Length: 176
Image 1 (tube, one colour):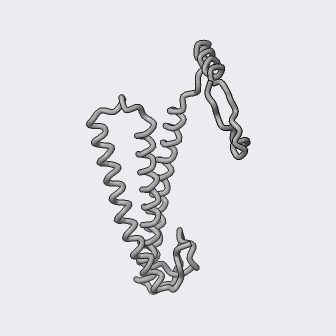
Image 2 (cartoon, one colour; image 1 turned 90 degrees about the horizontal axis):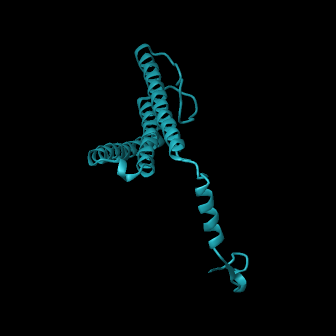
């Protein structure tokens, strides 16, 4: 028999006595009858694959948006037109695109995608049994995660510099 402090009685110094044997017997009976907890690994694999695809789509949309804004910037610079930004991830007031805004927007979205991809790598490592990994697989995984983490770190530094530059030039705070 194990003594357990009941949460609602703990303030009064009362202790509830409860035996854990019936629960263990119930679990063993269910296992013998063929009942078991569902396997969660397939669920996690599908969820992680979805996050991978989502990060890839986010990265693709960010690149296409930056490309469109860069084309608008080049048209404005070449022909003296006043076209406005078409895709804006920063929610700034409408205006002409600048290279700093385009770089900042693209860096922010790439950084978000990289953070998702690093998180997926970590979760994939945690859910798979260690016996399934070979040493070469672990080396590859650590190299990929390390490169993604380094990219995210330096891209974060670049994003901070661009953010300060934009705040100085436009006077609008970009942080929440």
